[in-house]
Length: 249
Ligand code: AMP
Image 1 (spheres, rainbow, N blue to C red):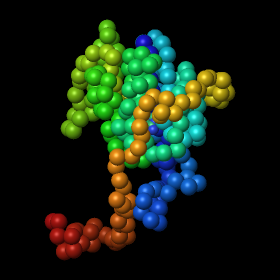
Image 2: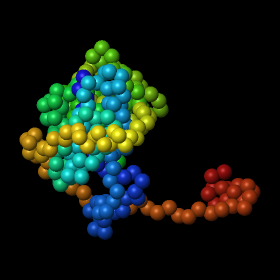
Image 3: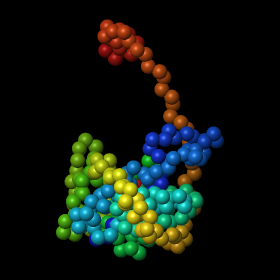
Image 4: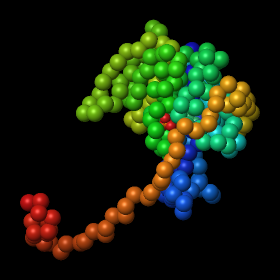
């Protein structure tokens, strides 16, 4: 069973995002970039499936600038078999990404595509759902547990107020949530080995996909800064403040 894992290069989750002076977006100049954290979880899931004998090959795909090759290498060091870099310096919106992934999924004949539930830069949470629709495949989103058996996937989903378990037919599209697993760190020998794994280089045009943006960012603003808190001397002070100032008791 072939598994396709799309990984996005995004601003590192530890970096405090700063908005550009003209409000057109987040300033990415000289900022540390890493693999989208949810995509590390997808890669880990695929590698565990290969270790368990369920998956036979793991193909890693990234759509982005030349530097996205590093993100693919990281996934190869974790256990991916080969990579495809779809190179572009333009911003590709989820619909563009989904169309490219559809073409690759069909070309590769991939049985399962495992994506992150969302990319932490734009928080779109759209690509997996759009991909499943374009492919006409089943989808299981927000997975916190995945079992593959007899041509079906049993997926436990994180939904409001609890967990929901569904069974979908293969081929399918799965998006992963935070609690599915804890991604491994790539060991040094595996990082060295990953350097030799093949990465194909393509462009969106190779897949006949027009990536012209359809959305216009009107403005980007920083969240309002929170006011500093106060320290109280005693429980009595706290109760007095809650009663007289906050009016909550
Ligand atoms: P989004 O819909 O943008 O929140 O992204 C959801 C998931 O789609 C991510 O976790 C990735 O698995 C995949 N994805 C989105 N953009 C890209 C990209 N440029 N390259 C590869 N995968 C992507």
